[in-house]
Image: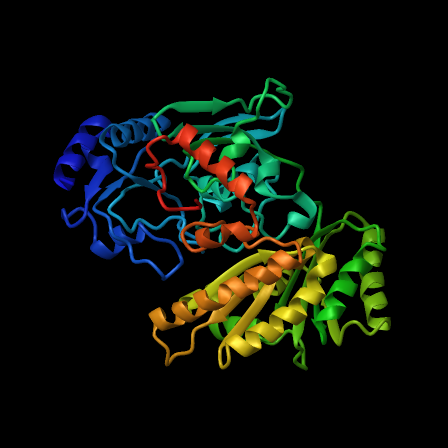
Length: 470
């Protein structure tokens, strides 16, 4: 491919300053490469042309050009994924949505915001708050992830137990298909019973059906006040009993998270935070509740008293103010960054029915002990919605290639266990490059064939995020 020719022709379509070629003197090479990868370390980026569109028309022009010339494309957002979904390894054109970060419209009656897909998720939170509303989808990467990427992976995060997945908060989408066509799925109204709701195909499609350029998201009322309870739990089975206990109290549960002692140690090392309790514990649980009045405050202490009397915890504390809330959350939200920056990690993001969780973990622990001898295991997750993040940490003496090779050999055995217990091999991180070979553990052959047919309808030449998902 003549990359210089591609750069010149794309520059004529959308503006020269919006198109960069590798090593053309415009951008440092390491920064350039960063737009063609995510937080995985399996595949190095390998591409030559980077595009920064500023509008849906810009994206449509680039995709139309790519369609006419048979050039593959990788959409790039905040690159916070862990499945290789944003990796450009085969000389694709990379389309970064980072300059598409504006609020386009606000409807105070319906309670919606229309934004461009490159808006950082945390900025969306601020935009909602400034208008007296609340956007409830939240997770550790909100400071760098883009809302378009959140939608493309159907992100969940820490408050799914109360608010659901991002799918539940998307009213409308604007997307550019693999032929360069622009589809606008109406987000101005709540009721629209006019056939297939096609926007849902694009939510969770990881950029393989179309590039999301704009979104209309629903907003809600912010919680009046929030309280966090942090617990030291001696046994895993107690965690599920504690979750059951929360159902006995009429108090809105926003989040229910857990982590192991290994995870806590890594966060302490990375962030310099103190021990939460005087004595260490094998597991820790974070619960977040909405508190609206003094009666709710009393219920918090009733919950803590109840689980203490039932000997489900070895220690526990209720945050007394917002600062202490933030400190407790650091123990949980600092895990991914603490691991990713200091170690090479093989991540598995899985989900299971809660009633099957304990039996699965017993079998999984035996499997990991036999197959990953000497490897550290970092286990944490959104236990309230059955989502586990299972991280295998590479020993220092092992090379990256040998480490990932060993992990790949063991993954099918783990996925068979997940299939046995009616779970999913990917809860919220998506399939990307890393899990596509194992999709059959969660999808039937008929489903896979239908997904390929849908892909062909929207992207007939297969140029959008090739090699991902299917």
